[in-house]
Length: 195
Image (cartoon, helix red, strand yellow):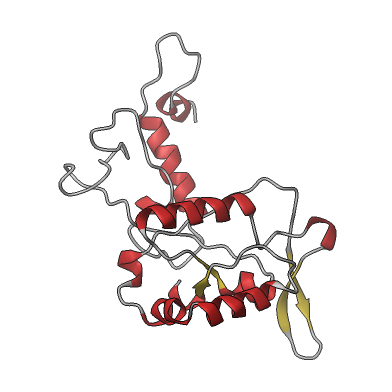
């Protein structure tokens, strides 16, 4: 993540945003170089993953000219945005509160390309609140009824897209939640018994 990070750059037109970025470097060279050579990036970073519900899409296409390659194609009318205003505001407010350095992905700033990542780890499972954040049922210690069911409970890189793993863990965890009295929901055990 560190090699794809750079100084946060405010919204401008896709053409002008790289120039705004160069201006940030010119006015804040120490901050820029601190970000480049800072140590313990993973230990000192918080990654904000901004989800959005805009009607957009992208597709991968095979191109032969000038050389064979897979390319991502975005249609202009429903292009995936590289800048999401509310996400930027939250990031800047958080950075201000913790005296942090707000950063964006370099590809977003320089090439107007949105990026995504499957952030894994950070919420370890343990036997007590001294050894982990969640128990073996994915419940947060000392917060009854609160569960964490995303990539943060997966301790390391799986080497493949983790979506199905996250889905399977979530299905398993939901099967552990007791069905409320009077509910017409069929339990997983009952569903499996009919197979």
